[in-house]
Structure formats: C-alpha cells, structure tokens
Image (tube, rainbow, N blue to C red; front, side, top):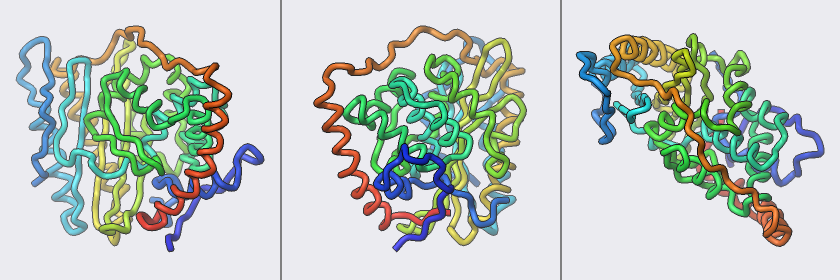
Length: 335
C-alpha cells in the first residue's frame, strides 16, 4: 500500500470523491517532509545559430552538470538540462525519461483554459501544485474533448513539442528537450497567458531551483518511485530575455530515495549554473530568443458532438479514476 501526502483539498463540492482518489496518484505535488562526469546523452537536434559564436553552450552546460554531480557525489546525484531558443534545442546529461510528475500540469492547465476551465483551479494546480485541482482540470478537458491525453498531446505538437500522456498523468513521458521547446513558446500561447503569470507566483516552500532565478518562472514536479526507489525532481521554466524574448529551460536531478533531502540543494546549484550559462550564451549571441509570436491554431472545443461525447466522457472519468488510483498504488510513493 502506498503512503501519499497530499496538499489539503480546497475545491469544495466541485470535486467528487472519485477525483480525490485519482489525484492521489499524481506525484510531485504534495509538501515534502523536509522541504528545504555526466552521462553524455545529448539530443541529436543541433541548435543552429544565425552567426558563428565562440561560445560552446553544450560544453558549458556539461561543465555545470559535472560540477553538480561532483559536489553531490556522496549522494549519487545525476542531472540533466535542456535549453531551447528560436533555432532549436540543446540537451546534455539525463534526457528526462523519468516521469514528468507535476511539470505536466502546465500544458494540462492550458488545455483546460482553452475549454473554459476556471482560473481558480489553475491557481491551485500551478501555484500550489494541488493534485485535486489538477485532476479537475484534466477531467474538464476530458469532458469537453473526449480524450484529455490526446488534447494535451495536440497542444504540445502545435508548439513543436512531443509527449506521451498517461493516466495517472504524473507518469507521462515528456523529455527535457521537448519541455524546453514548449517553454520557449509559452509566452506566445494565447491561452497560456494566465498560466505563465501564475508560474511567477509559486508558493514559498516550492520556490527553488529555476523559480528562484531573476527573470525566470518555473513549475516543478517531484516523486519517489517504488519500482527502483529513485527520487526525481524536475522543473520546466521560461527565461525572460527582455523585449518580449524568451528561452525555454528544463532541468532535473535524480538520486536514490535515501538521498531525497539533497534534491533541493542540488537543484539550486544546477539552476544557478544553467542561469549563468544562458546569460553568457545570450551575451555571446549563441542563443536566439523566441521573440515573435506567430499565430497558432487552437483546439476547437467540440460543442456539438457533444452531448453524447461529453456524457460518455463524464462516465469514463469515474471509471478511469479508480483504475488510475489503483495503478499508482503499485508504482510510487509520494513525498
């Protein structure tokens, strides 16, 4: 049986008992008990700059990762980073094959806002990483679109990102490179305006890593897997470069579960190093921020199809919820 610690529900009658059970399956959302040489797996897409630059961003990021892994060598910490600009993405270290945990709440919230969800739910899901609110947003998308996972995947694809959505959605796969690419476009997504705003208002006990940096906003997610007892803390972020420009960021640290209390210190060191490299790369002209927001098609909210589809979706929420909770109970322990 899994022990989970959840953020106290504050949604009142808007959530059913079923949604509460399913939300327990989403990790990286509840307050932790103690809130306080890298693997060369690089992305094959090469960041293409408009002009030659002597600054080697990949080498610089590798140096940051080496520093983190050396400083926390006693805790067996490993790290990964991805940075994306208007020309592509560079990724070093871990690729982000671990669960997304609560970082996936960002596109879920955007998809839900497209379908008219309440901003109050977004406040809770993003600022406080409240699981119940996030599941309510997921259910809202399923109610309107029939398949919440496909709706979120479609949203990611519109902005050159890819992910595999699962239930419970905390176990979705969203590589660091794809997170960074999506992050670089975040200020340009019409329905993301409010999500982008509240990513800069994260509650104090989650204000760490990328979120502590100047000109950067981020959403974190963390969890402990019972499959191999590994602990992962991830963050999806956006660096504001001024004049409407942005660079997408994604970082993660992993470690054995017994070393979980070192996640925040390691994340802070990693984020500070990434911030320094990004600043140097911008100054050198190696990074080209996303500056122009081109109109993108939005998901059509099916008004028609429907009552029948909506009714079926509503039924499936109840049925799938129990399954999600049951599945999660064999896979993870939440801090």
